[in-house]
Image (cartoon, rainbow, N blue to C red; front, top):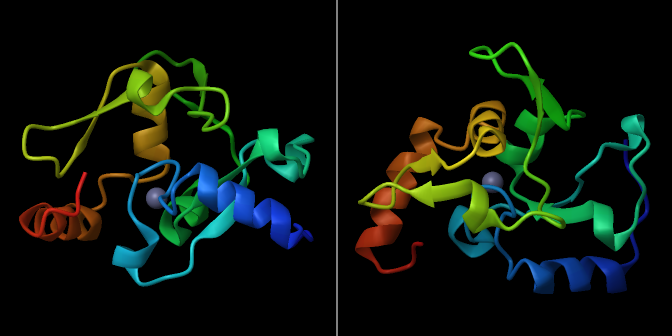
Length: 138
Ligand SMILES: [Zn+2]
């Protein structure tokens, strides 16, 4: 669904997230694609088009997340909510591996979000290797 989001609000969100994906932390300039303003709680689940429910996301994270904000944890059988970029602190739920190429979950929310959004997709891990080499990541 495409919803009108004012230019002012879009600018504010880009500034807040420093032109990085709120989920995988990739820089828009390094991915060579235009990042998207994403509804954290999907509109189909009642999420509103307000700052507190919007974030900046790279297209692959946004496509993978789709219209979801929870997923089933296959290990516990419980429904776990995704990381909420406006309410949660990224560092509380994720950390980098020693060479900064893969995300490691710190919580069940981190685990389910990494899996659902494919935040360690092979192409991205390879790109992170290069970004580390040129001192642009993390
Ligand atoms: Zn992303």
